[in-house]
Image (cartoon, rainbow, N blue to C red):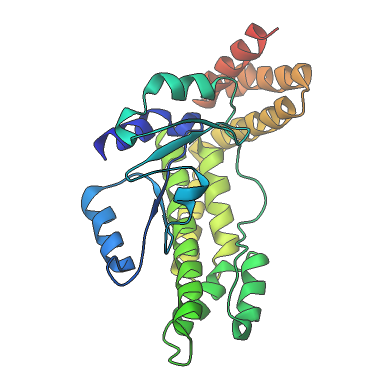
Length: 271
C-alpha cells in the first residue's frame, strides 16, 4: 500500500493512474472497503467488482496482483504490486502528455428502468439534481438488491467526480495556475446545480474572478490553455507565438510566465 501511494505521488501528474479492484459481497461489504480506504489513505480509484471476473481477464492467478497498461491499452507488465518499479512506469510514460479536462462533466451508467430520467440527467451533465434523486432512490424499498447496487454505484461515481474535480482545482490554485482552477470550479458549478458541491464551487469561483490581483494571471493562463490546444493539434509555430505573448509585455511578471517559458523550451527542444 505505501509503495503504490508513493508511485501515485510521484507519477500521477505525468499520467500514471491506479485503479484498484476489490471483491464485494456478504463477506466484504462496500462499507468495509470504504473504511479501509479512509483508514489507510489509499491513493487510487477503487472499483467494486462482485466475483472479481477481471482476475481472469488479466491472467492473474492470485491476489494481490497488478498489471501495468500502457497508453495504447497494451499490458506491459504483471506481477505483485510491491514489485512494480519506477523504471518501467517512466519508460511507458515517455511522450505522454496528460490530457486537459474539456467539455461538461457527464456520467454514462446503467440504472434501473424506473430511473431512466435520472440516467438522462447524468448523460446530460446535470449531476447535482441526479445525485439528489439517487440518494432518494437508495431508500426505495421496492428496489431489488441488483438495482440498488446500480443506484449506489452511480451515486459513488458522482461523489468521486466531485472529489476529483475539487482536488484538481485546489492543486491548480496551490501551484498558481489560476485559470486551471477557474476551469475546474466552473465545471463543478455547471454540473452541480442544486447540490452543495455547486454552491461551494460558486463561492470559490467568485473569490478567484473578483480578485483584481489575479486578472493578469487568469489572462496568462487562458493563453497557455490555448497554446496547449494548438500543441495537441500539431500547430507548434502558433503555440510558440501564443506562449511568447505570455513571456513578454505586462504578462511577463505573472507566475504563469514561468510555465510558458518551460513550454517554449520543450517545444524548441523537439525541433
